[in-house]
Image (cartoon, rainbow, N blue to C red):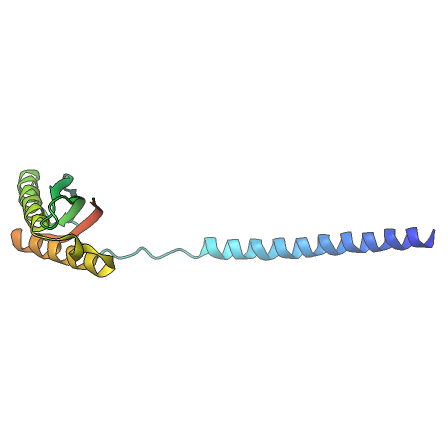
Length: 147
């Protein structure tokens, strides 16, 4: 009988301690959530002017310079200043031609690793900037598949 009473007593103490700990944790979590709600995040400043637009280039598929049996497919977008839709379409076509010309003169070894991808990105962005006379702010490579 004493053993049964001791087990019931210890069970009640454990339940009480669990309820108290749960209430304390819940109150602490509610305070943290209220603090997060009250803090408003400052809007991030964009590095682009209000007239900048993201224009998607059509996917480009071409063979590489070496070895000739390897193919590359690239999808990219360009960030431009204020251009009319007609000017942007013509510029996108010229930049696509430049990308094809670059890829046809490149080898697979040039694109290996993170450094190779960074060089590709820098070279294509430089070509786009030169071609557009500075109207293209950035060329973004979305996908690159080499097969």
